[in-house]
Image (cartoon, rainbow, N blue to C red; front, side, top):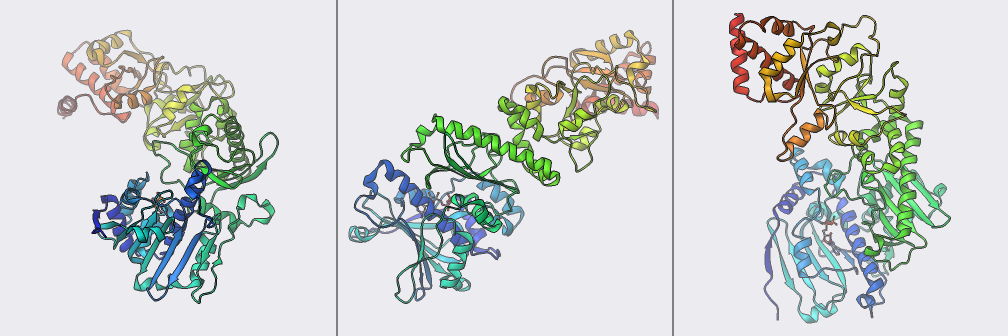
Length: 624
Ligand code: ADP
């Protein structure tokens, strides 16, 4: 008895990906094979791992774990089959009808911007669905390990797919695992040719640890077409850069050139081999909130998990494998959480990655600058998460500053080497963009003294600076918080005189406080202003202006009123002083405009834009 196939629609994201695939003008359609082989290999890994604790899954089945490729010339089709974990009906619906993978949304957004999705397919790999670049109809038959039922999934792309259970007789003869039958499009018939397939396997999938066999058309026995050797077990000297790169592409599913390759064997208390890569570009899931790494843990060449957190979250961009000699094979993923061996490996590998980055920074500053450009914002998370390695991380940081060029960033060592006499802190300013930061009035007094200020534009900067203890004995200090304490630093020759030197009347300060009321927590004469009439700073204790703004954006937190610092040398402030004893309304207008202007310079808006416009207009008309 056969049931009628059940109709299903694809999740909207899948439909969009399929649309991209079907209309793809992407020339490297061949990557579909790499994706199917990678899925087959994952399915074999999963089965082998589960069978360690649940031998019944493979009981009675002595077939070698392998991937088979079968060109079917008369059917104009290509079959890719594995005897891995398989999928039941529900899993077929979930796995081949929706997309669970994070980052897909971003992929789709970028693909929409790029219309054809041309570059992105190769860059991200879109998994199973890429097969629709070469096939107009795909049939998947799968039997899950440990179950007797088998199901057939069929789709011609478009809006949906069908699923039907096989009859019990058919199911009984269906081997465990998954077979994917691709009915090839007219322009994709090349993928039935042995040589073409073999070439693809060699260049994309040679690193797969299970044998990949191809059925010969003429009835000869199957041939293995990959070397199925674990690259990391070979001596470094025997590995070519191309082999490393191919391995990186295959395991990381990243298709750029790795920026750093780290390959070594650790001996001693624990024995393990490490082959890691720092990618040459940002992985698309770098900013996912789960902050998960992707290092693959093997035990004596058997894949265990890519979820063992072998590196801290701030190194989540690193890809590759760690293969342990001494861990028990049947270690459960739960046991990995608190395993002392994992802890020891994690510690050593983390240190090694940081020291390799440091070496690169010393040997090839330009190459390192690119790594920092891509991953600096993530590495900086370590500055407040990993106290133990904070000093090592400081050495890796690079910053834009008032002394850096457009491209070249400065190290803290360089900053420390350029300290002025009497300079007591490492000064910084946080904000959204370099351009905005550079026009901050708060910088003026520092410029006049030739004091370098770090310009920090990553959101994470607002956080690590608060936990930072200092570098080479100098604390980090925000230039928008508290007293600037820079009077003791000499002005550079020819610099304009900063505000404080010109003095101000206590009466003006009192008058401003009365007018502005609770909008400011204090009014002071500034020593950090030269050209601008006023600026805002945060009180001595508590968050600086940058962090304050971020916190205010998050939920119902009210912002502490800032301190208004004024520049008595500025004509506008002098006008205020003069109008203090005259028309009260005119004084108030000027006072509020001064405050609103300081808010705008900070990237904010006047509290009450309507009133701001009114005051501005009154002033303009009065002057007309
Ligand atoms: P990804 O492999 O990146 O998760 P895919 O679209 O290629 O994305 O596959 C989706 C899911 O379908 C896989 O995560 C896996 O659970 C399942 N799958 C695909 N191919 C197979 C297979 N040959 N055997 C078992 N499960 C598979």
